Image 1 (cartoon, one colour):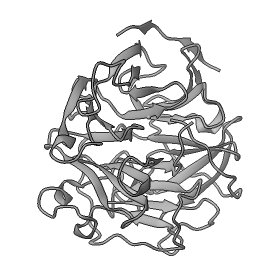
Image 2 (cartoon, one colour):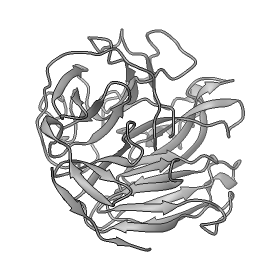
Image 3 (cartoon, helix red, strand yellow):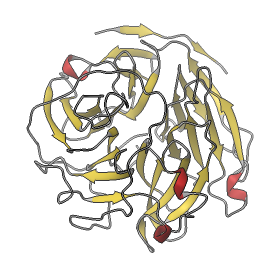
Image 4 (cartoon, one colour):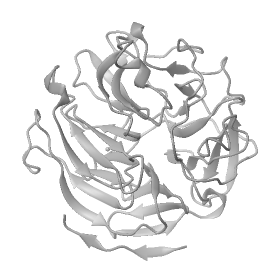
Length: 372
């Protein structure tokens, strides 16, 4: 195992889920190149809601970002086949969900991130989703009184922005990560999304080259961010010097060198709150919070250009996506795949896969509503 001690300098996470039926299959994946320019996807005019309806997020379904149909799609690994008839839920911004047809919906192209979180800050909500595409970041209702998927907060961006992730904080404010179009562009912003319009757009920006992921860690009460390095930020309106209406972050520690260049994704290790899971252009790693060190993930789970990673509790399972030729947009869109891969978290051995034929998946993440 590769163990690297990183230099620390001064300067959203966890999951608890129920058991899931074990599945089998063969893994199909191949490494590819890093994600570059935005590609216009084909459009599906309306989201489809198929399969059984539920008022609570079933843990742990898997949410995918399908850039062919330009929507979020949620599946159950217990289903041997993933298709429109087995899909548990799907989502994209529509006018029926209160999104503006002129100023908001056209910005939703190529979805890049999806999370479901327990959060009751917004009136009559129990859970929310956060989602990004290249130029749109949003919080939407998942459970509670009201229409599932309805807009709660949204922010659009110009065409120089390349959004890759967002996280909601416990107080209802959120953090958005932009990788930028060219090196060394990139930033994270904290928004006052907990506030009513027009004050919900107040934000503070922090330069961060190639920012790709943000993750709230409720165990340690910090925000992790991944780009050309791994950073730990404090967030508390007293500690960070902001207010809930004008929130700020405070950089606590910067791990100056990743074990290989260019971070892509960041997730909780649901079986160990002292660890994070992260991917880069070069490989897949665990980060030990208490020691500030990285280890390479063993076996087949270690692979270059892995675009997303997350873990399933109780099953000792990792979920990953890597670019592959089965994607209908590949190789022109060299970040996509139609295959979601599963691995044993301890050994890294492949344990199965699911294919969504005709899809262009960037990320596949455990659809897990809980923080630690």
